[in-house]
Image 1 (cartoon, rainbow, N blue to C red):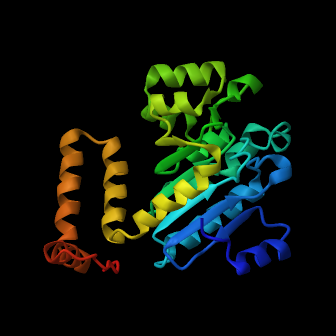
Image 2 (cartoon, rainbow, N blue to C red):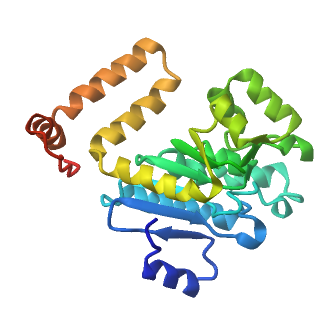
Image 3 (cartoon, rainbow, N blue to C red):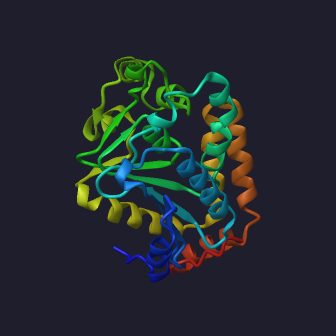
Length: 272
């Protein structure tokens, strides 16, 4: 597993107010780590704001080809910060515009892998569903428990969950608030793969490195077409696919990839 760069460790030590840490190796993979260990990574306004800023920065960085999002080895994220919500009124909640805060994650053009250990509850589960691939440890748990405190998901939990696992599994999770373990989440289609807890981050990094070695323009087009096509008719989605496929034939990476295949050598993709 790649070591944390010295500059990242120094940054964390000098910035105690940072609740989102970023590791930026020079191999195209960025690691984004939620860092509120004493609050089980609860998604308060500061963490959400920093997370949005990080994703804006990484989306614009041409050296980053894949992003791994993790909460660490014990917990991914416990959900919303209830202490900051208890006394809030509806107008205040509306004016927080969380949809704008989460937009940089939702619209990130780079592939994003969630590496989930421990529990991902409420907003934590919703955060994983903003990602493209979810790798969970055997001890991971997923839940939308908002109904138990008199509210409901507000960051896409009702909509992304039903698209991921279907109406009946989604309704069970949403209306009971009960968690599902990683194995069940995998069977439901909520999780891409399940590995031993100690292997979650190494597995996510290995996959991220494999993706980062692919042509980035093709990866970006694949992500864009998959997401845009999910809510379109099949005919419209297939048209989007055809146009994106045609566009990639204008790239230098397409020429390099096919030439390397013919010459039986490893391609060198440059994102052009």
